Figure 1 (cartoon, one colour):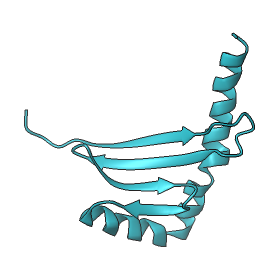
Figure 2 (cartoon, rainbow, N blue to C red; figure 1 turned 30 degrees about the horizontal axis):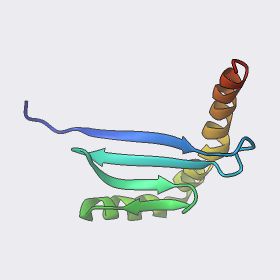
Figure 3 (cartoon, rainbow, N blue to C red; figure 1 turned 60 degrees about the horizontal axis):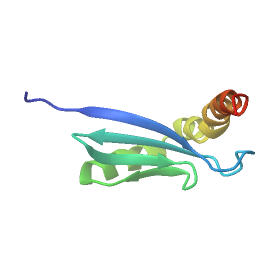
Figure 4 (cartoon, rainbow, N blue to C red; figure 1 turned 120 degrees about the horizontal axis):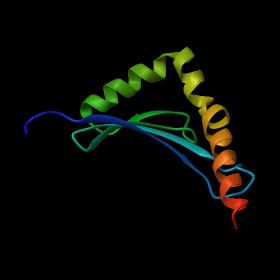
Length: 92
């Protein structure tokens, strides 16, 4: 079937039990091609296509939005990792 496919994927990546190396990634893809991505280590959006570069530049200019995205390591990633890890650790 013809059509377009756009999706956003959020990831929290870490390898230490104290979450000190936690990285929040938010990737926006269109038809299986990553257009732009936020990486909490980099601290900004990065575009990977011509259109993605434009979106990233505009998002990076919005300071209020950037503060919200940068806070996701503490607000989203760490609390969910703690819940997930405790469920796994209690079972082993």
